[in-house]
Length: 105
Image (cartoon, rainbow, N blue to C red; front, side, top):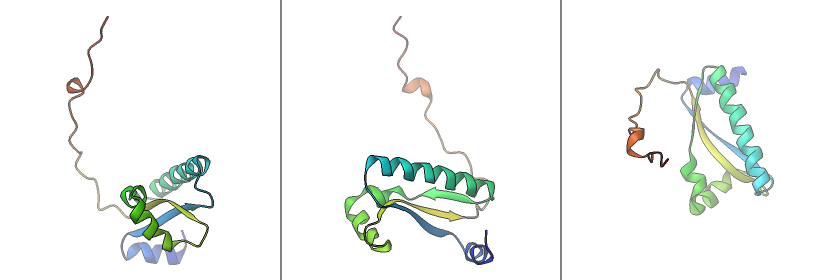
């Protein structure tokens, strides 16, 4: 990470985006692979990432966000990147027995 990047992160979380030239299934897969690499590299560097999927999933907000990229680029993912405040409490989960079907042998 460069000095300028470190300074930006010290000021607070950043918003980033992944974009592709095409908006095809193959481009979606490549963007997903890039997201995996980014998330793993961030974690290895002691950073936290959180996808902001609602913006991209809604056609209206996706069109509005497209003003953030050059013409011909398609936003595939927005995300927040920053330092974690520390461990967070676990989120509650449903008991699997409430949703799994019993074996029908």
